[in-house]
Length: 516
Image (cartoon, rainbow, N blue to C red; front, side, top):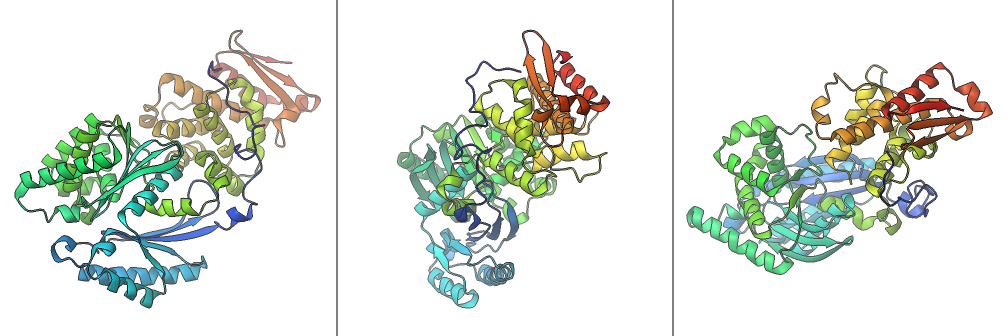
């Protein structure tokens, strides 16, 4: 298990960076974020989200969407949909009342393409503020691009590439690198707009091609990754999962190759959309926009030639949350910070995860950062499903992690972390109904997850206060020996069950178990 890669800073690292350092929850600037409510008034949907808690990954206390279709027909009439206005105003009245009942303070409300482009946008703006009391900010396309890109950075602090956010009436691009937003561009490539392009299929294809060429000139084409934001993109990604028979139906950080996406786009063009909608549970209003959005995506791939296309469930709403975060919180690892928050709320002994990590760390030795953080996260979560019935606890751990709203974690990392926690409660994974998901990991990573799980399984029950008070682990992969040096107190704690779990851990390492 020991790695030859450079070591990650240990638990004695800088407190500002180290998730095991001084908790941020006592910081007044962080406490101010205990509840943050935002409303996003888009061309197709209007959504209210209330983020709960100070964790670096957003926790969704409340999340409601109305497919108002405010921008339907805008390109043809120049005005907002009359039905959309009625439905939208009703939704916003409800959201204002909900915010008052939740006592979350003023909602941050932004409106995008439909409101800024419609002739009657200012009139509806005034009506909203008069009827609901909400303060509404109508933002331009460049600002929309910035906020969407910030949403991606909330979930992917290390993200570098091009953020592409598609709505009903517009599409924005933003370059991100080194944790900042750089070049930005906006266009009218939303599906509602494209429905109004005259001249048939050839004219539509030429319009999309020329518009994307202009966008490429503004933001450059040297981007390895494209990050997709927006409901139409997520619907296409869900269809890609369906076509490929992909086992983990979590859209955030779902990654696609250009070749796979081209096949999916062709498959969508040839398929019965009603049947696809039924299979994937996509709304009819969303599915109606998928063919045009697919055409735009295909042209994006052709002109930008990315190496990978990634889906972000985070966008403008999360960008608004990121805008309000203190810099100290932004610098935290989103995954580990969220796991700390979960431990604080749900474990029997908050703080034990840090001690457990320190106890088992000698087994792994210096690890590269991407592996080190997963070991940390696992230790923080090892006891957060203790209320689940023992017969289901192992698989509940797996399900909770793989489907949780954690960010900064790839699908393979989700499965690795889930499997480690499964082994925290269960020796064997064979025969599990979750086996299709295990196929996302290599044999080496499967074995590493098992070792991590069994290390936590032993350490968590060896001593309830601090394993270090009872003994010290050492491991030599070269000699093939796992040694436990017991203290006087540890001799009393090293009972029959503890010994069995220690020997199971040694067996997973293919090492001799030695107790001294």
